[in-house]
Amino acid sequence: MSQDKTSLFNIKDIDTELVYSILGEVWDALEERGYNPSNQIVGYLISGDPGYISSYKDARNNIQQIDRAKIIEVLLQEFYKHKK
Image (cartoon, rainbow, N blue to C red; front, side):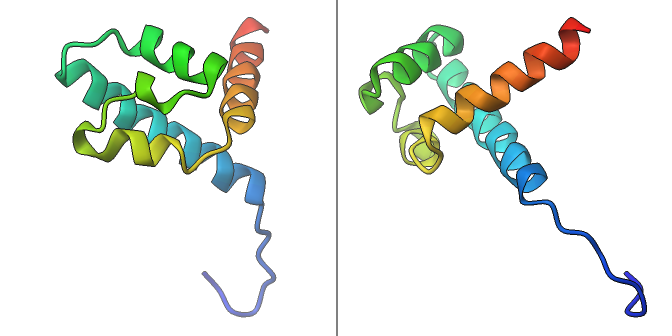
């Protein structure tokens, strides 16, 4: 990055990438444990009960780092992008 130009920093992009990253890790951990990741993540998002997410590979702690509303927001934005 050049020091003679001002760089733009977009926190929204960082938030979105963090959600993607953590959801991917949680998905993989749930799959490895034999769970249906989609069902488990939806259960967590609807109820707020972290018991839907296995503690395997620290998945439960990782998903709780992100506000559930932020996860839903990112998922809906992704849906809308692909809808077009």
